[in-house]
Image 1 (cartoon, rainbow, N blue to C red):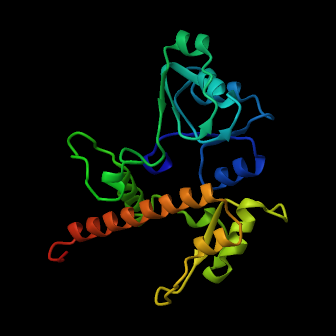
Image 2: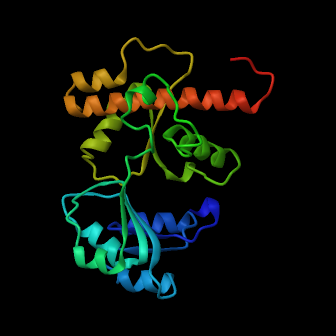
Length: 240
């Protein structure tokens, strides 16, 4: 939001996460369970309620959906990206005539094998923001300095120590705070067995987790191919 100049209010159950994003330039933040979130949202929006809420939580509770409805303005929009319970409080959403949308993570094209695996694009006249175009725009914002992801990186592991990264994310035995975990590797080194298969063999991830991560890897590969095509198109004279 900051990259485009939109005022944004960040909410989280973790005080440390709220403090972190405030240091990164977020206009205002509040801690769910500690602060009077509805009061903060009302003050932030001059008493009107916020225009839109993006839910990126993972919980079996429908509290995020209910809270989103409470802080949204009349005829506002709620977009659910995270895996949250969807028992919609009818009175709240009906009285404000809210628009609830379910977003499939990266954008149109997600889970479509023709798009993700075969590279068949959607015409821009019909679908402006596909997952590839979303990624292109994100990388453009990074390239011009509007977005800086470096402060989000809390841990860096060599590729040989990738199992330690999985242990941190999945088990976190030392109860460390982490946001983004980065794996480093030498581009010229060839690995015959992927770290993902090693993690599966060592039972650091389940088969379901393996399948999900594998699909994400395929998606990232296609996004990178799309980014390469984008770079080539932006520099005339480069051959495919």
